Image (cartoon, rainbow, N blue to C red; front, side):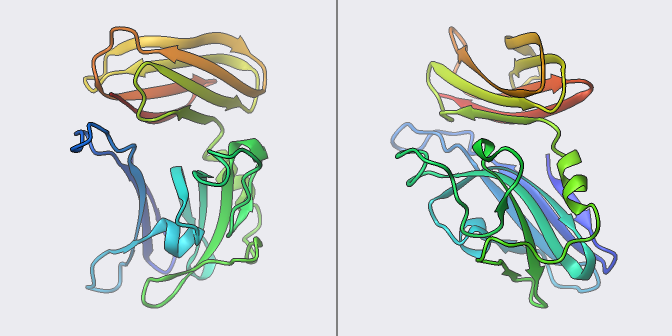
Length: 231
């Protein structure tokens, strides 16, 4: 689902994820990407697409799983993204350290909070010193409240076995469910009472057919989803 925010100066920002549903010539299915577009609603000009790795993260080896955006004062764009460096950290191990922005919350979840300046031409200026610009009072709490749960599944695409990492901010019934593209529930990897903290679970695809699925984490009337590609 797209995430939309509009500032008091009538600038709009939309983030959304795209996934290719078809295999390429090698039989692989792309895990997708997060897109960010901006528009000045007072102008007749169209939407401006941004390159996350180049314009925002300043790191071409970044893979972004999810992102929320909030427009603040003076058209400052605050983004909260879950990402990883696929070369230095996902493959070689170690603690992720973003080139722009600052780690937010539990460092092991690789959530990055950024304050980005929107220029008149709708380009983005990202701070490369791992600091945030002056933020409106409570902006960190506001952004955190939009992401009370965290959910990560890998490898994605996967063939048989999937690792699921998730976190809960408070005690509750944690339920992780897999849905097919028709909205039918096809599996329950997790359904248990859990306290606040970080958890890991495994899921075996079994006799499920190759295709696109949705993984959903629910707890205390909150939910978090991500798309899965089964090859």
